[in-house]
Length: 314
Image (cartoon, rainbow, N blue to C red; front, side, top):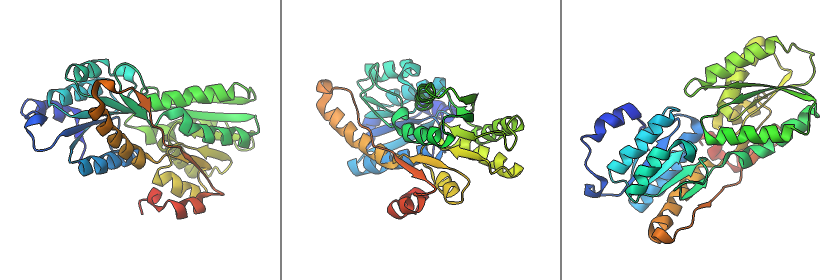
């Protein structure tokens, strides 16, 4: 897998890089919202494996949570004559300038969790369907009442859609009081711990049912650090994506549930689909190609790990 390249470095290099057409292999450009986050890493690895099989070169730019840097990165790849571009996970509405540059250069852009719209050719990894089983379990565990800390992130389409789904599902359970805090990228582990500490201060032990939900695993894992530091074992913790740390936290009894997203397969299938998109040309019709999530709980985690050892990097 290629090492992530920061947008700033990429911008400096753009002046000296030759067009992809002059290279030995077609260039696949990948723009990641956080190229070091576990789920992003798995998707990039899957995409890279499929690209290498197809004989494509891969270049990754880490936009570090910035839509402006994502637009610049897509424009950079368009200027380099990329054969295709993957957007992870900025919503299509936030990357209009990049999409325009790619469209003008006749380069297909697909998204991981960024949704279908504008000139996007395909999407997968959509946020809401993956989060639904976890939210359903959390509401059932709370029994329709209690206090919930929701750790959100609205720059990314995936988390935005998961938050919308959370609100829709909680609308039928007015007995659950929700506190929302938005984390940063980078900084989500620290923010998760900080917000959990403040929330725990106003929700002492014995104060009814308590739960923490992260729109992806990492903020919830940050919150687990705060829980362990305070010796709090009265709070259920839920994440989404099923990264290796989350699975281990479930095995150790520190996390209640997550939904494992097979992001390696998502990345792999998207690159395979890109080859179809390139072959179809103007006849291509945009579509979603989702890979179902797997709910992982303390009751099912060992069977899950036996079936999917790759979830722990094994």
